[in-house]
Length: 82
Image (cartoon, rainbow, N blue to C red):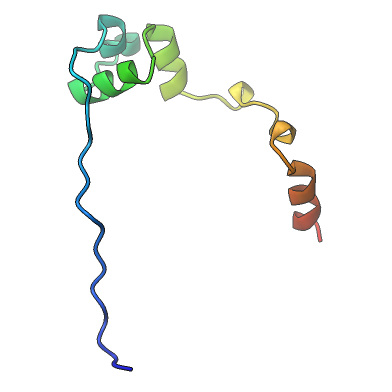
């Protein structure tokens, strides 16, 4: 075995954006202007309302779902406490 470090590189990846402009609501989320790229990505993900964008970009702990609805969460909790 040699001691030389092997170079590791990831393949070159590019984002693929759908043509079209983001909605005005997404572009001006709660008075905080977004870059055109971020606005377009949010619009592509289905965010159309300013309120939805604001909630997504400013999450609250109370907005999270019940973690015990995830599959096998009870097993994970048991393992943590072992």
